[in-house]
Image 1 (spheres, helix red, strand yellow):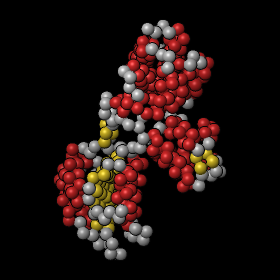
Image 2 (spheres, one colour; image 1 turned 90 degrees about the vertical axis):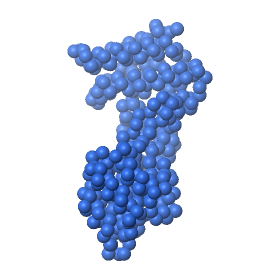
Image 3 (cartoon, helix red, strand yellow; image 1 turned 120 degrees about the vertical axis):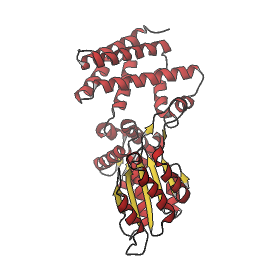
Image 4 (cartoon, one colour; image 1 turned 180 degrees about the vertical axis):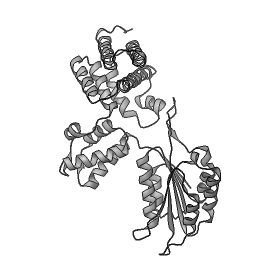
Length: 356
């Protein structure tokens, strides 16, 4: 039985799915560990024995075989969790042996978890997650005799819902606008979002977490700060732009990282403008560039693109390309190089020197 997202996995668990082998894989560590915990808790029950945990990247195969054949004291099935396996690091014979165990299980439940790398999004195709080829024997066996779950990261809307729900579990209430800002700042980093919810709920006295509290206390990602820097540049607010840049440098953000995030934002704006000229909607542009789930970022950028020309944004990208080369090869202080480039972007925006 194959499952392709967390919601389907939770439905399978709630339906009392009694499979003896489970293979969970994801590019998000928190999502993977949370799903594994749900499966293990369901299989062991409230009074069952603790699972046998075999940690990766390479589990002890003999111990795995012994655990799979052992009888529990309570007469229930023993749950064996293979945590964070790395199939590429395991001998092929070990993977084959685990695959051969799957149809023979009588007194055990095997739960395999694999943290995979997310393939980058390609034009017209979303980012994807898949197991390495070395895991194919195990994948085939679990698909036939158990449950396979490929757990994709939630999109921004789903992440906001999770933030609100987790705050409710903590006894606090998070306003929708505050949840939106928190996800903007932290991105879809579920471990970080969970920690921020705990901090903000405590700071609010387990009352209401509003936008002002998030602005004052929440962790800020470099992407969110650079997005704001781009907005200030496009608005021609030089003083505020340099103040924010100095703040980022004071917080020891690497000039290369700031420059890369700036280039990514301007590239998104350029592609958004080209998509508009091709009479595509923001949703269509987002899906073609990134896959589903990135519409909110492009919708925000669409407000900044208004009144710009493709030539003007191309000029800004040229400035940022030159900056990247200087940062990697010049002896001039990197912070000064970055300040110079921000000044050039401000002038480009003010003078419209790259306008059609």
